[in-house]
Length: 139
Ligand code: 5GP
Image (cartoon, rainbow, N blue to C red; front, side, top):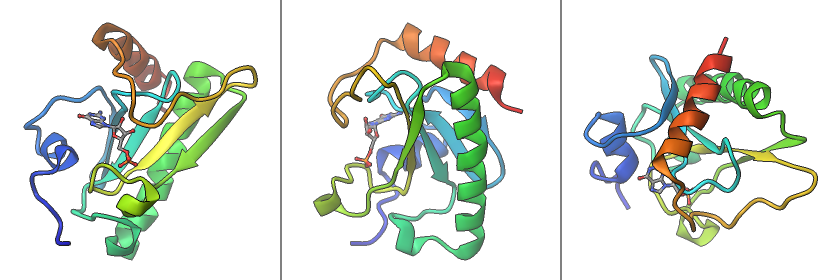
C-alpha cells in the first residue's frame, strides 16, 4: 500500500491537526499519545513520509534514533519511571494503527502495568501538563 498523505500523523506534521508537542527538530516531531499507555507516553515521528521502518532512509533513521534517545531522556527526567519501553509496529498484522512510522516511548512503573494500546483517551488538560513537564526537561 502506498503512503497515505491524509493519515492523522501526516496532518499533524503539516500543522493541520493539533498535537501536544514536546520537541521538534529539522528531521523529527515528538508529541504525546492521546490514548497513553502510561503517563508521559510520547511518540517520535520522522518528518520523512515513511509508512514503516523499511521505507525510512538511512539519514532519517539516524536522526530518529538520536531524537528518540533525547526525548526518552526528557521523559525519564520528567516522570522518573522505573523503566522505559520503546515500541515500533510495522503493518496492521503487527498492530500498527496509524500508517506513518513512529516510535512509542512508554514509561513503565514497577507497581503498575501499562494500559492497553490505543484504548482510552486522556483529558486534554492533563496531557498539556504532561507535555509541559517533558518540554521543561528537554536539554
Ligand atoms: P500504532 O498502533 O500505529 O503503533 O500507534 C498509534 C498510536 O497513535 C496509538 O498509541 C494511538 O493511541 C495514537 N493516536 C491515535 N490517534 C491519535 C491522534 O489523533 N493524536 C495522537 N497524538 N495520538 C493518536
